[in-house]
Amino acid sequence: MNSFSMQSTIAASVEISGVELHGGKFTNLKILPAEVDAGINFIRTDIADRNNIIKVVPSSVSCVLNCTTLSNIAGVTVSTVEHLLAALAACGIDNINIEIDGNEIPAVDGSAEPFLKLIENAKIKKQSSPRRYVKVLKPVEVSIDDAYAKIEPSDQIELDVTIDYDDKAIGIQNFKITPDLETFRDCLAPARTFARFDDVASLRSCGLSKGGSLSNAIIVDKGKVLNPEGLRFFNEFSRHKALDLMGDLYVGGPVIGRVTTFKGGHKLNHALQVALYGTSDSWKFINL
Ligand SMILES: [Zn+2]
Image (cartoon, rainbow, N blue to C red; front, side, top):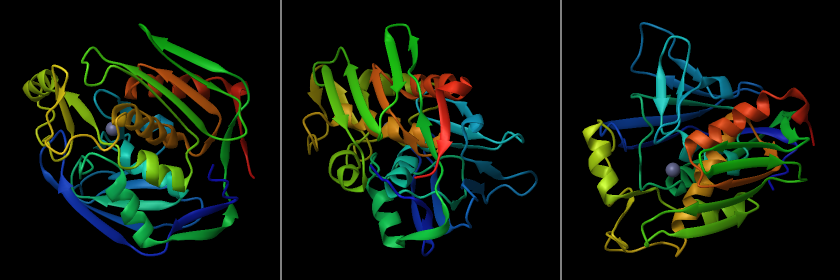
């Protein structure tokens, strides 16, 4: 695990741009260092007439349909934060300001790899205050239909993700990982988001996935992967779900516990967080 005892930010500002997966617009991100205890904050630079700062905390999660959306009390939102947050989690970044001129993080290649490279290029900078971890003290479990998620005590962060899709190109897959910077870089960061071809049409009819393409998502149809380059891992789908889980968990900060999900997704990840943080004796803050 990333057993950093001190808080971290980045040493220099860095920028990345790209097309939004759902909105389809081109957005620009600038990631800047922040002071000790500042936390992770999105700043909507295209909004000037109301509060444009969205804090990355569990109470900011406002929508978990297809992606994770955060909002502030003025109703200002930022969507599809999970892949960037997973990269920040892997690098142990606690304090950072993320300026964005739209309401959705660019999809880049559908994975967290470009965000990881961006943060590593900016260099991780240790700060002078101890890091605060969420230590899980007793098991918490949630279920939605036949999907379930559980978080339980462990001495490190562990993810155990099982998915089960009708399409034979995906099927049943399991992926287990104890994510640290190295295992994240090699095993999770490159795993891309995915969708079934038929679902893309229905997402588009709802105004979603407008920027989705074979260059930023794996598309499967009737047992086949449509991307000409194929998969990056035979089990890229379950790896991506583990990446999403890691990003969603980081909304609450670094967690020490074992998380198991079956047929998971953003909705289940959020339900697990609500259950965990809603049960005061199931966790506590610790320093290492
Ligand atoms: Zn994802």
